[in-house]
Amino acid sequence: MTFSLVARSDDGRLHGVVVASRFLAAGALVPAAEAEVGALATQAHVNLAYRAQGLALLRTGVAATDVVAGLVAADGERDRRQLGVVGGTGAGGTWTGPRCRPWAGGQAGDGWAAQGNILAGRHVIDAVRDGWLGGSPLPFADRLVAALRAGDEAGGDRRGRQSAGLLVVERGAGYGGTGDVLVDLRVDDHPDPVAELGRLLAVHTLLFGRPDPTTLLDLTGAVAAEVAALLTALGYSVDPAAPEDALVSWAGLENLEERLAPGRIDPIVLDRLRGATPHVPAPRPGSDAIPTT
Figure 1 (tube, rainbow, N blue to C red):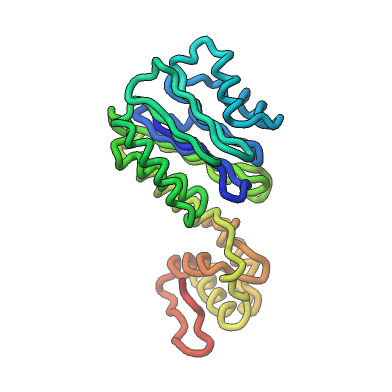
Figure 2 (tube, rainbow, N blue to C red):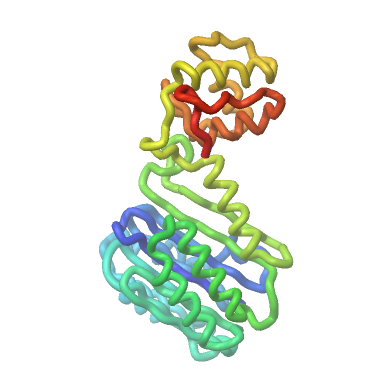
């Protein structure tokens, strides 16, 4: 019913799972991951116990291939299961039971495992593999979705499309630095779920992505003046020389608080602020002009 990819980032800091299926809310059942421990996908005749059991084994240092072997050996329904596991180091592991509906199979390599059942053919997993291996320049979550998209475009689930999901974990990278879940997105019922998952990831990155320190602008001079004018036009009471308090208030309402930086402004936030107040003219080109992205 499903094809998926479990993977680890090249630096070992991120783990994730991406999945698509002609099955309602596959993202609610298939993925599990723990920061700096590993990730797994349970599918076909899903065994939800694999998630906690597999992560517990990975936590103790058991290799991904041995986790797969241990889980399926203890499962009387293993012939109907499909499983992919990746750990903190080493190769991924994958299992396809002989009673999984065709086409069914998987592949694994250093830091990844791809698997699927009821697929258009083995070329779907080839496409997921190639999408993953060829996507290294992309950010980790985007790389996962690109690999899933490659499988979807190769035919994916031979019954059609319905749902997709993405789970990415990294130590301390969750909202406000208070957790490890970096991305947790689901498309539960949609005619084009992989494309919708990509759209949601783009929105997630816009709202919750951390600012690039090399692009931040000092909230002084012409930048502060423009920000103050924009916020004033939106009805905020602003100190023209120090608009940061009003900026924080506005950004919180726009769900952009993760992009705030004390004494500076993310160009992405500035562009969003400009878009919210289109009637305020941009500064004229010149030595004090404020850059746009």
